[in-house]
Image (cartoon, rainbow, N blue to C red; front, side, top):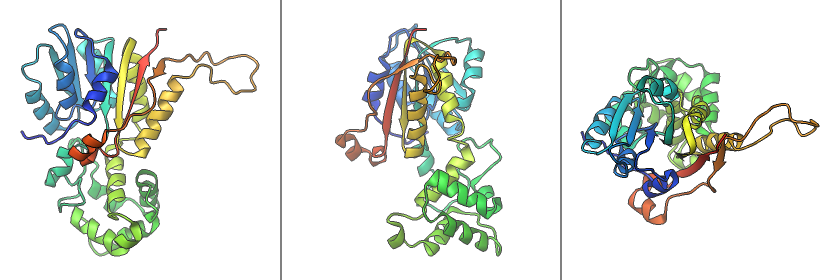
Length: 310
């Protein structure tokens, strides 16, 4: 399978993880296994790669891409929100490192029938895991206007959310909106590019995709679960591609790196909260050379942290 996805900030991720040859590493968003393959090449026969992904295409591609490594390999189809249960099933208590490469993959965008791209006409789907019942078609045709406005604003940061939601609700009175092309034409008709400053469908497609896959609501909890599983001095590396994801990661890291969280007017600490990680510097961004090679890396940010000793 030609799983088209260029691993973003590969060298930076490897440096952040400080890979130990006999370590156990968890890739929570396996994709085509570009990051996992590079980690695995640094492991010996005592090392282990555990890869999670909810997309069956990614599982097939990763299985092929990870073949031939000296280390152990465990590939599981599942969502990273389930990482605790998955590690328990595998009999793994602690890991040396974990990585998240968030958002939609190039393969998912470029596979026309998946409905992720506003550049190709396809059924409105957008499910990363096609076992999930909710599709983009369900969102567009069945959410009420207020609900559409909410997700367009919150997940798409779309300033024309109200106008687009109203247009969607008016159009579906006549017939259902079944394809990405129909949705794009509807958006373009009501928000010309000259007013929007970019393709007017981009933020709407992001918002609907996030809603369909529940991407943001599980993120902070998954990061905390991964940190809990790290050994002392274990590393976590997270790549984000838009401000909503990055804000969640930044705030979660800040909370985990903080000691007492009692209100400032408390005379003594009663929360007993202790820092569990050390943040490893500021967020990193791709080099100009990488962006030139891979334009989809342009918005990427890498944040990394190290587990503190108890």
